[in-house]
Image 1 (cartoon, rainbow, N blue to C red):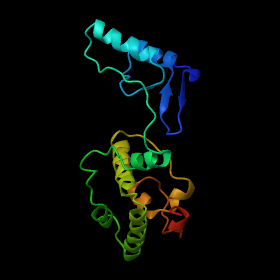
Image 2: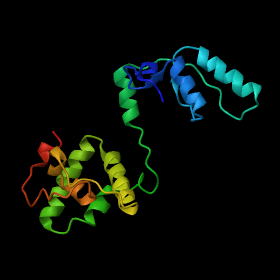
Image 3: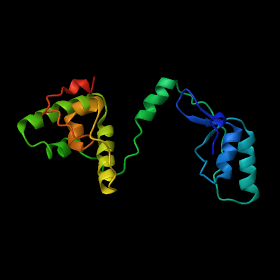
Image 4: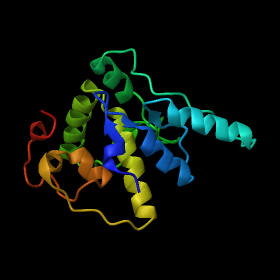
Length: 177
């Protein structure tokens, strides 16, 4: 078990392991190629070990603070979404148009999509569509909805929550402030 003393979170949000923490991972046989490691003792030991025994593993590199500012780093990371095809290229306007039946629903969806697009949250919607479909496929149960997300009719159509914001006259501005 990894001791919290053996790791910390840097200002970029990366989990960084100290030497003792990475050795715990190493002995547990977990994949540690993506681990951020401070100190060279564990990195050197690991690299010598895989070389000595001819293991087909990627050598580790010690952790280096990213060159970007914290704000730029987070902005870049927010642009990276691990969404499988066909969700990555899903036409959201078409997807929602198939589900919004009445004129009122279509107008609400158009308004919300415009707000999502203004905030560059299209990939978030695609990810949520993917996650909800996978949870349904695997019979995973999630809540009926809470917080400001219930003000979004689009999230209702996706299935993130079960509160019809049109029926209860909830203002989308409560969610996308």
